[in-house]
Image (tube, rainbow, N blue to C red; front, side, top):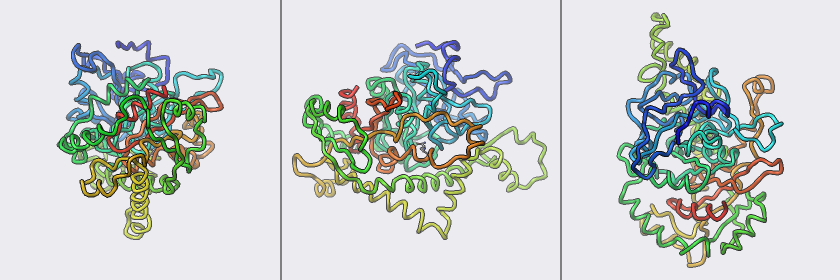
Amino acid sequence: MRVTKRHLSSLSGSLKPRVSETQPTPYSWINNATPSSSTGRLAGKSIAIKDNISYQAASTSCSSSILQDYNPPYTASCVQALVAEGAHIAGQTKMDEFGMGSQTTHLPSNYTPVHIPASPRPDEPPRSAGGSSGGSAAAVAEGSCWAALGTDTGGSVRLPASYCGIVGLKPSYGMISRRGVVAYADSLDCVGVLGRDIQTVEEVFNVIPRPDQGDMTCVSSSSRSAAAQILDNHLPEKGIEGLRIGLPREIAQRTSSALLEYLKSQGASIEEVSLPSIRRALPAYYVLASAEASSNLARFGGGWYGSKNDQASGKRSESGLERRKRIRTEGFGKEVKKRLLAGTWALSADEFDNTYLKALQLRHLLREEYQALFRIPHPLLNVERRRQKQKQAGEGLDVILHPTAIRTAPPLNTREDRKTKGKGMEEYDQDLLTVPASLAGLPSMSVPAETGSDGWPLGVSLTSQWGMEGLIFRLGRVME
Ligand code: GLN
């Protein structure tokens, strides 16, 4: 699809401004960088990428002033895979700075906030497109591109998908290479896919999972083939006949009975299950993600990365430490600073046992609770452990289902709003239902299957065993 500036200019401001231009244009649209190819599985398809995924043809800023003139020396493996299949990289999309946020409002001051392009109630004020991949979600929803890549550390693909009424997949951890993706929290970060329907998401997903020696957490080809063999034997022969779906009683209360009845009519069975640790997933997530971020973002301080314009600033008399302090103080936004302080505190000698280790323990408990529910054991466990965990035929779940978000898209929380009203915990609460699958490393997809009482879309999340994206797609297609 060919995208014109006119087409883009009307809508949600989902694409980042080209900061390096003397005459800034509203979007960073890099049409000429990769002419679309006429061969390959994605021939001619236009795909936007979140601005924390390195693309050699353009600057990659993570929506942060500290990286405003950073040009990555190579293209991320996942983008290389898209281009190799003929995709056209359409543009880079706005995000919460370094992926920290849930509304794409933590942005440099020259970026306008992102909102949902189409409204069921045009007379209402604009609503948030969600975050942190809000730019990718809005670009897909407004039709500026066929699909988009985002990243999902604790929900940043699924939450915007839910708010914008599109499909968003967070694949299994380690399935897609993170080489060239700017790290937020390595043990949680996943590249995800957004599209208007499941077919689109599946087509993109089929191209990007590959082993990659450039990312040590990316699963090797031997483990992939071993897992594929186990998983193939467990797919239902057709449709969702015999599929066992669980609703966690702690969070599933609001799933509509019409949807559940429909799934039953298609041959699935539905039961209520319990994941007790899910209630404590949110604080555990924020401790772990902030701790990892405080370590990852230590690299930005004017050495390898950081503003090059700094040399011209005339402050040659300052010491190295003073310079680092100034660059970080000026370059990071408020939310990022907050997370770095929280993460550093959690890792400090006095707090480590009581905060960071506790969060790790909670994560472990939650993973075990998920694994105890599934019909097939985790395919990456060794054979002996798998045998111990093998369930009796007919026992255990295939998919866990619950709403993606605690609500429909909230009204856009603008910079002015935050100044006048202050900011409580509401933004963090948005992630309540997405962080559990992230902590457990499981694939999870938000499907626009419900509508809230206010008429706005609400996603339903389907979470399955590691590597079972195929099963999630199959169930999702039934719900479309
Ligand atoms: N909102 C969450 C956070 O701020 C999740 C972000 C993400 O998945 N990148 O950490």
